Image (cartoon, rainbow, N blue to C red; front, side):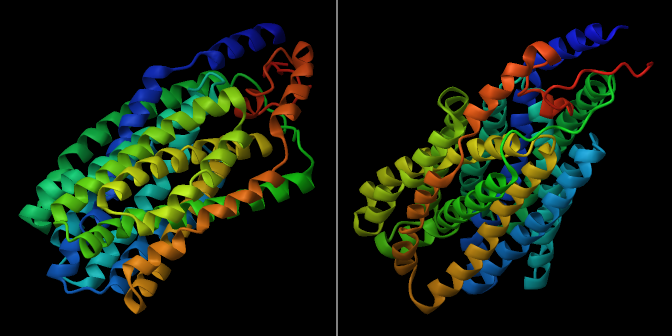
Length: 435
């Protein structure tokens, strides 16, 4: 086969968006994150049955988040060089094991162990699943990343409702019921892994890849990644304050029941899911930087008012907060992947890991702050975090650089925004392995 034939075959394969794969991956992400949210969703139950303090609860989150944050970049770095398609059902299997242990945990150390195993499963799942989303995107990277992530956010939003219906009322041992959807997830991820393995062979092994070219100078890349780290910090510290402590805030300030508080938490988390879906496609159209700017800084007016309003106004404000804040993460990941082409798994693992790490450390610090002050004071302090979004002004413009790179299209025959996925640099041609 000639080089031009290789180019046209691979280009046609990659440019087709495999929506059925993205939907299946999103459903698997939904199941995965339903299980992940079991921990914070049942905190009121654990606090009462095990007589735990806020500090001890925050330590459970810290163990879970730190395991995930430390391992995800390493997994992403490794799988960039050696993809592991069948690690996806393995990650879900580990989730199943952690839920069995969590349902039977009668001591605080066992709760910590189950949290650590849950973090391990997440660290295996996210980097490789993010790679599958990009492989199936057909060049619509923002859309694919958002569709993948919206499943996770929907799972996070439904988790508290399921916890309220099954665990809060019936007890900790009923977590075992969640092993049934875990088995469905293992089956689904097995199918996705087979598709992934086949398309890795068809698309990436047809040619010998060159090192991908960077379209933004190295110093600007370092600055941009540093700013994105600060934005992830502000986003996830504030997000964890709501995810972990919103129910306690509503119970203490407004006297609502545990079940009602879980429903209000679901409203917020569902808004987060809706915002996640919007961020990627909008970023594909207007640019990632604009979405990041709006989604982080745009939350500030609502977060600053939240601690001083009544119950129903607070619920409405959290809807706006969830919608606006959640749109950033998909845009951040795709923006960073365009900054550092050819490192899809590493960037996904780094940013998912940062999200986990910031959430874990933030939860621990906020738990200690709540023990020494009050939940209300925690919300007053966290209200200022979205103002860190002002740093977005210093992010370099990636989209103009990508447009300039497209000038090389007649030489390569491959769209420059697809080349990082396929491992080819701007200006490089496909090389027939038989040459």
